[in-house]
Length: 504
Length: 105
Image (spheres, rainbow over the protein chains, first blue to last red):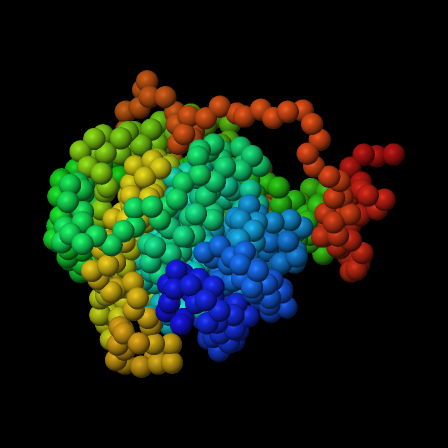
């Protein structure tokens, strides 16, 4: 049951083969057993969770259920959930009980879904390994010595370890897709503006976007039907007609269901910096796509290499502005002893923020300071346009773009902590889509053997044109109909055994 | 562009982050690495390119000038920080937030 799809769970619930309370208990029992070692969840509240499960069972009994009613989800701790501790992985918000719900939380509540708890994350979503969290790192369920990726590391580990039916995440530079690649599940970052940012704690507002983290493309599509949609409370929410993200997911009787699909392979995504064995797995996945009828075209995204420098101007600049709200006055951490207002600000912020968040605030403050604005911020915005134009040109030649989601498999905890630049390079293949505002996803495409004898997942990235999520989801779905990478689970009872099977 | 520990301390003050001498020195190495990465941008010719602040060309929506929010002051003030200096009181009084005095009486 823990490996069932959302569709299967929904059908079991509505046929009353299982109740939401029972299903919720199943996941909470797994959380009790495995979370102490994995640290995926940082806030649990069984009483709140069961109240929702009981309410869902009433909806089902009254035939008022929709596809996700009664299904237990994990929520990234970046989403405010009323009455829940909402920390964003920071000491600054360690005692913050959200007084209202984020739009995403409301959307799940409105369909009678169950909130299992809040998941661990890099502090204020700044990181690629979950190691910047004030609440400690998260173990990669495939190898407890390795990181799950970040910043949505808790949601990633929860999905991979089957400690939830599926989870939410946010992606500012790759925070859904890189962990999806490192933990072996399906994650989608939608087009910027498709999912409301209301109540989602801000990092870099022009890049932040929420999305689903789940076992399969079909699961992601069902979650998008709930998460996406216009919300007037987010000034960048896009006013578009409601769409059904499952509409293209059909099991075709043809042997080449993707005939006519043009896949662009950017040469910059297969250049230096990519692990050769990861490249082989991505190439094998693309060969599978050719069997499904797709055609491959060579493309170029010449400014890919500039996406990291541009991102590390724009994201810290926006973050330094967004995080200025944490001043110890109205909520969040206030220092214990202070002499005057300035002292209170400086001490509260120095104590409340961790090292990586401080670094980014300092970078952002520097690039926005008098005399440097044109050389850094404006220049970065100009190159951002060049990066977006690369994609516009590329999509004249292809329907979707494919490549790796991350340059390597999961790395060991502690390996990159002291080297921020090495950590930033984890997002080399994902950041450009955030800058352009395009949708991107990572789909499980195989495993590599680690030197320690563990199986480590590898993700295939699929990038689509604006608002093309439904087609991307079908492109991923057709691959998942002929492969089984996405349903493989780590063996949590033997995390440190020498030989570990990919299948459980 | 090379930066010094003095620059770090100045930026930290602008960002309202207390920083010690040893922290400023440790930060310098890491920040210099990041700024080195950012410096790659300077080789790109960008004259005449319109800066892109946002992925969609949006104009700001307007809404009707009507009251849409209810007053939730009590709920919001329940999560106010503690006063500090060992106090168990929240830093609020009569619906206002308490901060150190900034104007001489």
